[in-house]
Image 1 (spheres, rainbow, N blue to C red):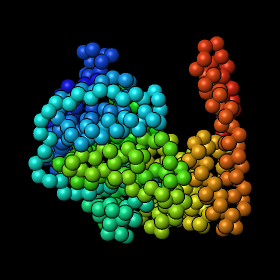
Image 2: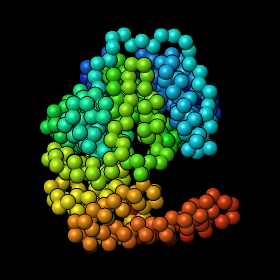
Image 3: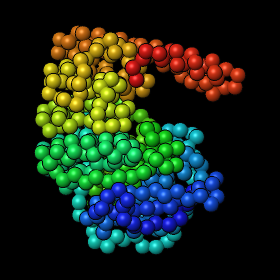
Image 4: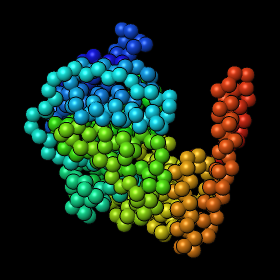
Length: 405
């Protein structure tokens, strides 16, 4: 895999925007070049990277998944190249299929000129990111993290790049919330999830690298990139954005931090529930690919149940669009241990608050999930075996029928 060339062009999206484009060639597709791009407001064009740093970050997980050497046409920060080797070692420990690959980077200076001056926080509108910025607003230096200068929203991650109308709706809500909390909002668009990068495992491997690449694309402005931590200590497991790997995407001039590790999701939700700006703009859903929450998936229901336990669900319009159905809660399938851990935590809070109805429904869902998982793992494995895969896949679908995921 090779970064063949890099250029800056006008954006075809709208006047007043610019685009950093990298042409990527693949070893198994001779003669084919695919453009990857980052689209920013024109006021930020002078901040676009002139190094290979953003391209090393975004191409690394795909090269590892494909097992192809990675060759770049631009020099990279030596510390990032060294850290890339450490990132690959961690990924290999997590999954022995992900073997480290060679990286070829030309020698040369990577000094962007003037020293970057701003700290930026990635802002999706979810529980984790709202918690991060609310805590940052309360504390001058929360956990060693600098005070944020602006928030950054990415179009092309949760909302697909082709869904312009949906992102416009979401951006309107996020921009209003950011303004009420005292920060300007920068929107960056990227096609990473619409190109071959999508072959990298977004959840378990690639999304931290993708966020780092967006921030490093503007490395001439940003001295600090802050990602909201996904899980608390008890729920940590191999994941695309992880405290062990996120910080290793730092360079000598841009520091990457994972913020909020060690704080249970239920506690984050309580902090968020005290902010009217946050409650009016929450966007937690991963299923709809739109500006709305489905209010019916495991992630939506986790937030809904936490707010219901505290008696504040009715103050969150994005999540109270339909009545809470406890039968749907009982039929949740919580495959990941981290989700079972988070739901058990909410169940304990429900008991303490005298909401035995919520605690009972959550307990049923957790027990049901623990019972189902071993069978589903076996069926998934059999689904890859010749002669039985059709039967195994049908049985897996039947087992999951009626489950809420």
